[in-house]
Amino acid sequence: MGEAETHRRLSLDFYAQETTVVARDLLGRRLVHIFQGQRLAGLICETEAYRGSDDEASHAYRRTGRSEIMYGPAGRAYVYFIYGMHYCLNAVTEQGALPGAVLLRAILPEEGLDLMRAHRGHPPDSRLTDGPGKLCQALAIGGGHNGIDLVTDPGLFIEEGTPVPDASVLVTARIGVRGDHAARERPWRFVWQVEDR
DNA sequence: TATACGATCACCT
DNA sequence: GGTGATCGTATAC
Image (tube, rainbow, N blue to C red):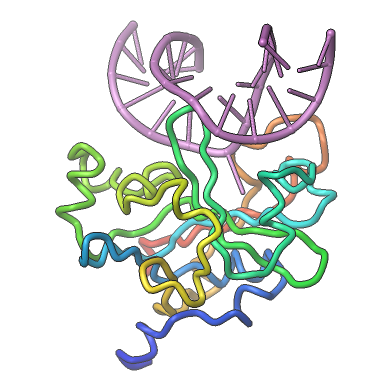
């Protein structure tokens, strides 16, 4: 795969697929935020799928003002505020009436490292972007980005990057899902075993 | 209006 | 292993 392809932006067709397919195929893709004219970017290495109105762990389990975006067109950014201090970034998925989104849980920092370190308060590089709240802080992504169209926006988007083979992908239950319901067991977390790279 | 809690993180023991 | 920070959102009253 050539240079031009790895930097090509993901299309609407990509996001419009079934949510677990999108979550799996987002591994190895490059999340980019152009901040003050500078590229802050990294390869996506951990995701979670939140799919359907019968997924008890999903914000879309209840259709409210906040979750409405998950019922809308694919390719939009869904950014929510949690625990009084953190933002989390999702890509909206699916077509038609089915709500879905993929939570971006971790990236491998690639571009704009110095700015990311400053945004995060200079932790060890290994902990720069290894959580959903951390990657948003590092890339300066916040509530103002909610609803942005990742397919067309000039400042926030995802590039093709490089494919990750199945042998390097770990599939588990989702992190932080509480409650005594089927959602706890669903194998909808996808982790790129980067050491296999 | 009031209350409880969360798709987290950092720091502590 | 445990816990406090801190506030928008959902839901109960």
